[in-house]
Length: 203
Image (cartoon, rainbow, N blue to C red):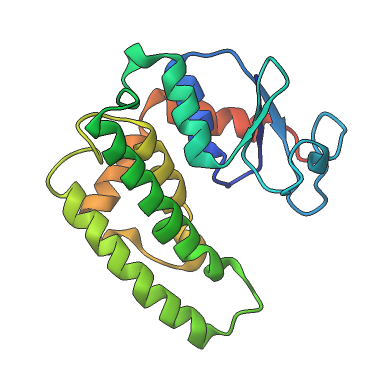
């Protein structure tokens, strides 16, 4: 398999999961501006949507969209328990959580990256975003992970919350989220993924 990633992007979450599972894969860096890759081809030839992550399977199929990639990977090694079995109520709950992270946390903070959006508008976006973080903080004040044990949703949430300093948002405002970030950041898989991405030369 090949995982196409960009620095400080949502592709970190499937990277963490790949390392949790101990699956063999190749890491290919993408320049988000030029769409060139570290293997010398255009990323648009891999994923015409133009954004990471993209996972190229050994049979040549290309899988995109973080939640889909995360669940696919988890199902390759169900014994690792990074996602409940398909068809179970617990799997539906995981999908609920992944959809929340995608639509309300990941997409919810996306406007904050744009230099074209006025600060006044960003303030409105932040207020809504803060309410979503309040919800997550309440959840994680009662348990260490989003579900019973560490799973794919935790890797995804960790990745998105790691962007808060870019927006000058202090995660310490949400103590449970701050503890969560420290907890996931200390996992060997997370440390290894971050080190590996840093080691791939910029394109």
